[in-house]
Image (tube, rainbow, N blue to C red; front, side, top):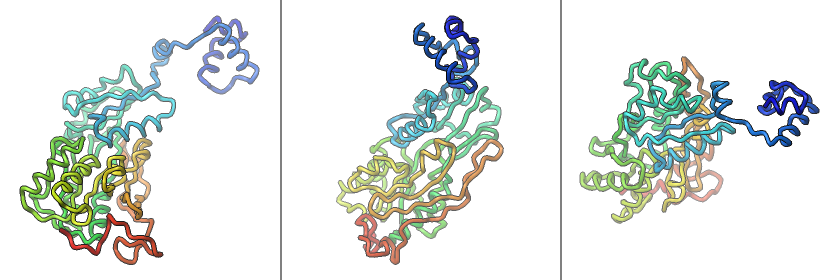
Length: 356
């Protein structure tokens, strides 16, 4: 850098500012520096810069797996939100020991900050001292220790949206396919919200699967549900992959989806968009979560789209406080499932059919 400074007739500080894009240098000075850099074929040494500044220009995203469409979509949105900051992807495989290492700051030598999506650990059960990372750490989770920033889409709002949607279709007896993991708070919140809305959710119709990242878990859940012999008219799934598996298993058993049994996923991913038939999914607004904001909506993958925008949340004591309630905007209907104004009624949401 000193050679560049001598050739351009400026200080090394000016060269550093120009190369970093910092303001202050005139157009002529900036041109001389860049011409000197080109003539000397000078290249910045990122490692040396990091040692001097203590900054690495990267963040770590720790997720259980990329096989889960929801996590893959989240990683993509975080990379978009990070702009020029490098995102280092770390797969924890949902192992408690690996997640504990992330909470303890194992990533701090290579990144300036980290985002953890836990599965094996329930962050809320950890003492505050166990999540004492030496550098900024944020959780994408439904619970967490005091003092650790956290972003999530409010579970009560999700459950309320699903319940309203099912009631609009005339469905009264749903099953819930959740996840058997320590960090899962969705399953209980969903069951509670559906029951509070007046829908009947039998205890045996609440199924937790150990393989939540692919279609296999949804297939397994339907098999277990069939074994119970319970009559259900809807299946609400933790994520779109499970929902796609449930749809496949139901159709193989001769069940007409969604005419006899409606299936709802979560995440609004391609797994729901390109399933046959397309699957209604709860849109968690992953781009907003990646930016540290939250919104949730129900996105019906047919012609009728209803979105719910919670009121703005806020940061409080290092945690994101999501909105307390949602309001539905979008197509209104005079009868459930039928848009006003002569629009065609989506085949996936016929409310005049008797549940199977």
